[in-house]
Image 1 (spheres, rainbow over the protein chains, first blue to last red):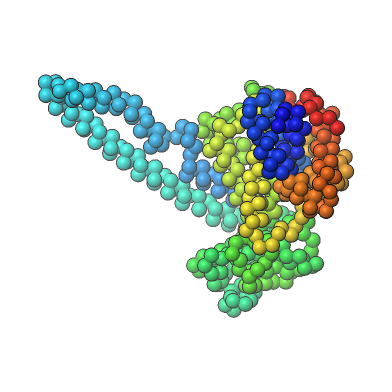
Image 2 (cartoon, chains in turn cyan, blue):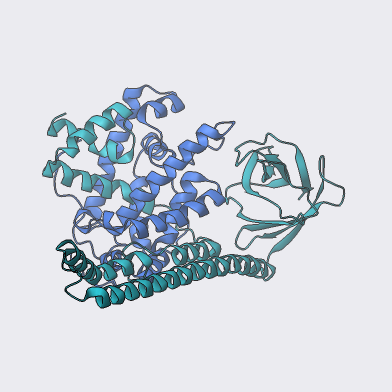
Length: 281
Length: 211
């Protein structure tokens, strides 16, 4: 592919509309390092990227921010200035290497005894042992911090969920939907859903549920008046049979007449499993 | 590369990315505050499933954090970088879902992005309005083809199949649509994406592709 052919297809490439073979040829050409084509590619990407800007912005649920912060706390960037075992050992090796080198040179030169380095060796050994202790302490503290961050993260998520529920209870337009057990579930299994029509959030709170079975999850469906089954999200239940799922109701869904929960092998786009809970709206 | 300061934030987008590359976590949080509504809108639009979109949103910002060196300020704006990254990851996830899903995605993409939410959080209504009105100038066929490529990750051949149209026709719709979009946006703005005040020059001045 030459430059002219490449430029001819750049817009389609940036849009992701080319077939695999054409894309590969174009990538190969760009990889040759032609500056003009690279610049044209940047412009094509900038143009196509604007398609995303045409979408109305959607505020993400607060739980995602909490999740991000949790992951950041557990896993600081490689370039983060936060002290980590790797960077501290590098700092240590800075000065330890010359010492070790000097010691080994001394030993290999057969001058060990003459230089009264028994004392040096002892000092070196003491320093090494102290460093090992520090290293162990450091590792333990890092692990503690990481575990604390994990606990903090799961607490933050629980808190965010609880706050979500409280926020929904404040809604000016709230519906309560009851869902009752069906099929494989015990009679006492049930769920209630809060439907906050202000924010279009739907929170399902299930209780008394028997778990969906190994390798399976529960999936919530909105069934519309015209019998479309729209996947809303998946959830699991804890050992007590309790589960919570918060989803956003698609704004273009139309009238929902039934909500149902089935067991599925994963997030499905059409229901395949048995109905466990159902409720009319 | 040094960019002018935004009125609504003391640190401009490129400076944020530089701070992130230095391991400044608060910079990543600011980036999230600023762009997560755009990134999330794109995740939701491509993936549909809110839970999958939630997960991807966090993944995207973790990827920005881990691979901050990938952003090249000389190659474009932060908003374009995020949009390109998000779209690519979302389409990857969509394709793997399609492979595992028992049934094909039933919901076919909406005809076009709706500019119906002026009170959104991205804070650059002007930019959105400009793109939306440029999109509105396209023919429905052009829009549908571009939409299926960008938001559903279909290639030209797949779009032709999906729309039951000859491949050549689909190619023409996409090409003419993109060229028209580019020209309209170039005319309506002497500047680049307004969400990125740091970007002084993004509208193309080259004319390597002519209608």
